[in-house]
Image 1: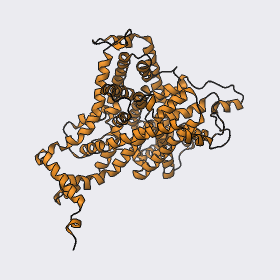
Image 2: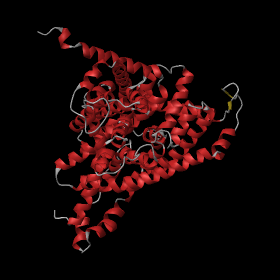
Image 3: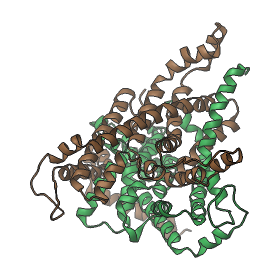
Image 4: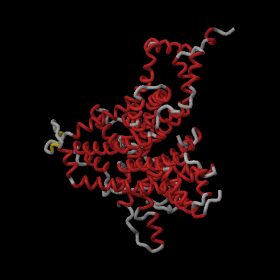
Length: 266
Length: 314
């Protein structure tokens, strides 16, 4: 390719700025977590692992992190069965009112998060379950469910319906066909979908903020509350946990489905 | 000879029992209902949101009694009147709307070349690098990213240190409108790139080559070939970015420091600061209406795009 110089320069100038803007916070948080000073500066005052050592003793932070993991686990456990069967049903059967059902199932994306969060807060409040942690997981599942259904339908549409007919023809009853033919075929979608659900629930901030009280803050809410008062480097160290989780998720997603799928035109 | 037990494993027996159970509770002539049964859990889960909207609607029709701090029993439209007449809310709405439009324009200017190179490059390594740079912040979450910006833009932050080296006095870069918009652009970039990229993939590279061989320079090719063909993707991305930034909470709250509230922050304050749930619910319902209208517009104009969940249509 011999693109004109002006084009190459313009493209790369804009991409360069975009790359800096995208990566700067991550790099700076990583760098700041290794500081040996007592306040956040970048470049760090000197290198040390002392904030990581402090982290080991910071019970509040670890408890908040474990709560986030619990919320993400609840969210994933609910969304796997619900999203998988809904995805298979949408991808394979001619359902009546298909358009209406699709639009309905996309509601979590069309309703702004603050609206969903406030609504769920009122519903959970009336049900008297605010103050425990599982409703937060349930809420994260509801607001991100379209991701799970979407991941499953994407791989279910690739499944040849004749395979299921063949299984039935060989004498397999419906459940057996589902578990031995349909489910293995949509497995890549189920895995990448649940990965998305887990990482999004782990990071979920606004809905958590609305549904938790001071005793059960999740990690994003804890960080939010702390940066409003005083910024200490131990927050940078715990944020690195998020960065590691995100890097792991990106690597897994790339291995499982390949990041390139997001570039495909429909 | 094999014993009967290994010849017919336990798992098979369990499956048999399950099949027999399924067959009794779900007779074969009901099979037409199976897809609906499979959709039921998801429909119920999303039903929680519908319940929530009904609750919001109900609450929005009750006013706060300031002497007892209880919501009124009877329905009134007073909250809607307040929401429309109080200048504070008009100011917040105007700030959010203007912000959303500026953020969208800037985001698209940067997202387009990013998506273009990602789609067109012949180097798989570069493509992967650009994809990872995009997905990593997407998965890190807003709070940690905003925290990074606090470190960079703070009074003793990187930018001010660098300015100090060339003799410029430290500036207040945080807790103002541009800081919020900047944070929002960073938050929106991955969404925009991922919405634009499929539209660019659909444009055959030969078209650009053809324009070039007919004598158009790259700018003319860009404005007369690539841009018009990519318009559906750009419009879709634009609407998504407008909606998400209009309704965002975290960036105005963290980078605006309470002085640059967007609509979501105003709603939050009504619920948790002034405890006027009725007014908060009214604002929330109005925002839901605007947001849903915008997204509904995207879906009717372009279909659900990459988020379409239905069967592949031939």
